Length: 242
Image (cartoon, rainbow, N blue to C red):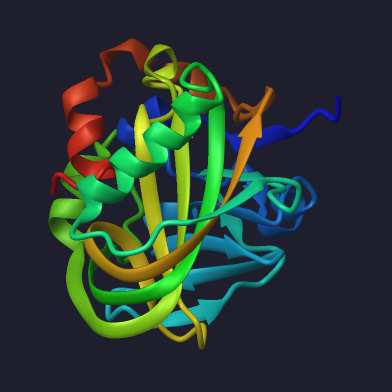
């Protein structure tokens, strides 16, 4: 049986507590996957990795292709080409999409495993966000986003949802449940998804059986008490509860 691994840069607890320094580069991240999501140094926008290309969503919802040497404080990536494909059809909101994806992984006894999915489709609406760069140390992600986050919406748009699932027992290493970013088909618009409705969608879902985590190498990382990161706070900023 072929092994499929997910590569993660740092932990979500560290990001939530304000560790926004680069831990890896985009170039290093792309060696480990063709699909994923995350953010950039100083929480400078939202990251979407699709088809082996890394994009950055900025505060007006526009997308730019990132440079290989761009710094990454937190991200996940994996290869999905060997995943299972299925039609999702119409979905009224983000909770309907999450429920359908969860039921699919439950069919394969996968609730204790990590999954990456891409959903290519037509979307009636996408409500998303991105933040501007904010250089800080020990300032929480929630407080950073309260200063820099901008919300925006897209209507009647073709594109892709990149979705990552972590099981409950990994909460803190990453956000438990589903976390979604969006990029338009023309690669011009995107962001971190709060809400979405879908007219049609085709999903490619990959189950992961191992994880590699690159922790920060600098001494400053050891000044963070990671257990102090609130799971409720993480859910609010990372899973679309605003």
